[in-house]
Length: 306
Image 1 (tube, rainbow, N blue to C red):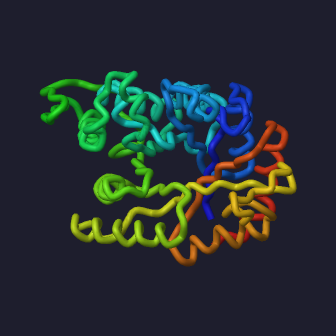
Image 2 (cartoon, rainbow, N blue to C red):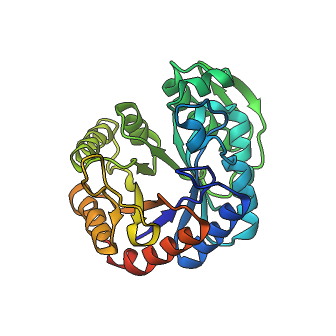
């Protein structure tokens, strides 16, 4: 079963993001056979409500992926998720097409509409229409990636007879993945996504979201739903020493021994039609322990999925 990996491009749970960590874990992921790496996206955050500890030091995903394209050769390079309304859509389309050219057609664009209102405010982007803006910006990307000359007429941006090159290597464009399990996100996935990428979700809610996605695909005349790749948090407690329990002492999903993690993941495969996973290793206090978790996952979990 395909599994992708999230390099640590942001501080999280005490782990300090560094250039070395981003680059070396990406190279290791390629060597271990992960099919893609995905970097997350925050531009400016406000503390002290947890955001600074978790996201205050976030390396820009697009710039970082440009560097990673030069030090890898086969692994796919993606964002998960790129907050679409944060950036001018024509400029973003240009950056993504350039990245696809420089990487030899390895780009995946997983997108979201965003959730942190103070970040929108700081960037001067309206928060209330972020969903509508995201949808239109995706259409603008696709227009810019079409053969020149390109034209577009929308609520937020319009242009006619323009030239926007280079075009992406991948035709008609890099695959668009959509993250999130809200109703607007699911409608967006039904319309735009090759892959739906839900965040860690209780099984029943995951099934409900999948069924809603099915209905939206049917209503839009789409014969098959997008492939489901679930973002899944893994913590081998034998490596990190963390207990991996909730406030009531129950073991957290994805935390524990290799056998427990295999069981947790295969439940989503069997009962929610999950076809692949994005792996986020949590609770890892050092780069060395992150390497250990990557090795153990590939040896003791990945072969038993599905």
